[in-house]
Image 1 (cartoon, rainbow, N blue to C red):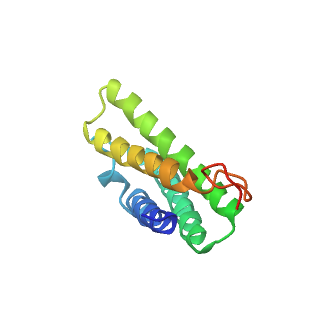
Image 2 (tube, rainbow, N blue to C red):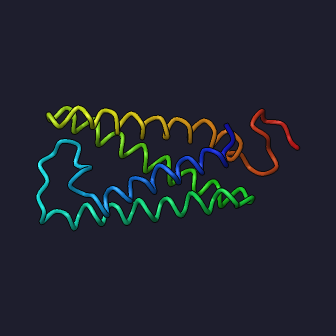
Length: 133
C-alpha cells in the first residue's frame, strides 16, 4: 500500500465519521446514552473529522516531503490518541463497540507509522537504509 492510498482511505474513513457525527449524532454514540443537549459536542467532533478528511485528501496530491510528513504526524497523533481514549473507556465499562472503533484507529496508527514514516522521516538527502541518494 502506498502513502497516497493510505491517505485516501483515511480521508474516506474520517469523512464518514464526520457525516455520522454531524448529521446522525444519536446513532453513533457507541452505546452511550445520548443526551440531545450534548449533540452540539458531537457535531463539533464531526466538524473536526471533516477537517481532518480534507487535510488527508489534500495531502494525497502533495509531493513535497515536509507537507506529507506534517499530515502523517497529524494522523499518527489523532488515531493513536483516539485509540488510547477508546481503550481507557473500555476499562470504564463503555460499550464493547468502542473496541471496534479503537481497533480501527489503532490500525490506522500502525499503518501511518509504517507506511507514512517509512520513507518520509529521514532527511531528504538520506534514504531509510542510511545511505545517501
